[in-house]
Image (cartoon, rainbow, N blue to C red; front, side):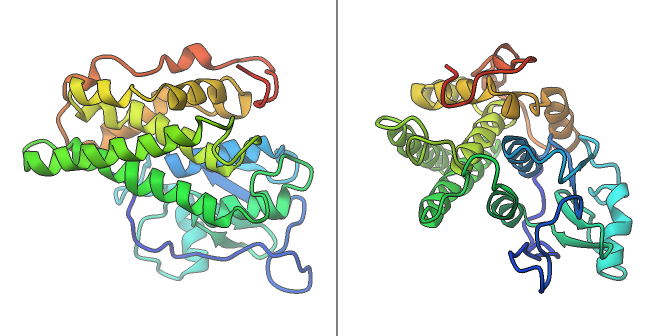
Length: 291
């Protein structure tokens, strides 16, 4: 099965506040993001950054799709990590939110970075993190992380206990059922407007099709495709340039194969979506209008 990023608590958990007199606060050109869009956490941040139109105020430094350090980190990030934590022993992983003024890493924790981008820098963009949606966003995050990502890993493990794989697949399908039901009566996961929940779901579906599918049998993949609203939602979002233009399918494949320790199964034969067909290379209509 494919290797995933270490699950240890990120070493840097600073937050962007709204008080200029204390700590980190939002200011144009103060910060820099280091992202590898082939990484699912980085892909969420890259899409959010584009949706908020932050290219002029918060630059992005791209990283290779496949980490190039022997410990699984990025060589370019090592000096940044060591500047913030002397002789830091772990891998220098992306994403990184870096403070140019202090020369220190603010955060390597993707959920915090996403929320701070939306809340502290998103004043002129869409309201991706509306007030009062904390619990709803957390529920979608749990469904995606625990109900889909983690169970897809277990369902695709070969050589293990068949009952455990079947149980994992059943849990995965139930999570997809819940997400499918959310879209039955609304255009987006939380209502009429695009939010961070939709960004999270889109990245989850990208990973499910481009990574996890390779280790599932054809019957399992067929059952996963039986959620038409979810995959239609994925198609529609992919057509939005803030999503589609960050979709590095080649990079995702190279990252996956560089660390994959599993065996491909019958589900690897045919993708669920023809992702490139939905990527628009030119300006597209806003997501709430694109079909």
